[in-house]
Length: 100
Image (cartoon, rainbow, N blue to C red; front, side, top):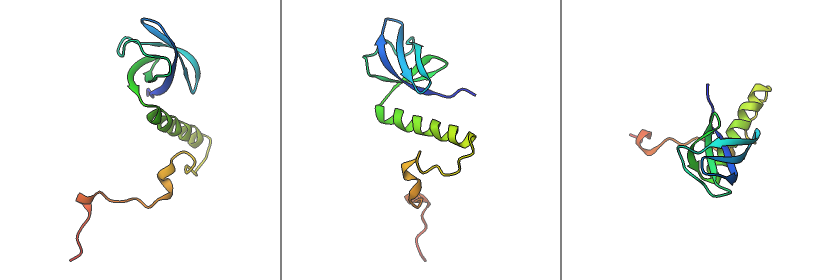
């Protein structure tokens, strides 16, 4: 299984960028996204950038990855990783039934 890991550009060259991710620094192939500005967030798979993402999305993905790490360690309370877990789930409008 291959997981996407967000990485932030620290320094960019023509074909590769030095980035920081949750796993430390890495050299990322930019073939699919082109050169990027310092500070840009990239979704990486196997040290290759596949997509430019927002900082907010990077935070959410890193929280989900931290939750996976916690689950492997036996944690069962995931509210620290997902801010919306403390609310009651809502059905989308098209699935709601009108009272008869």
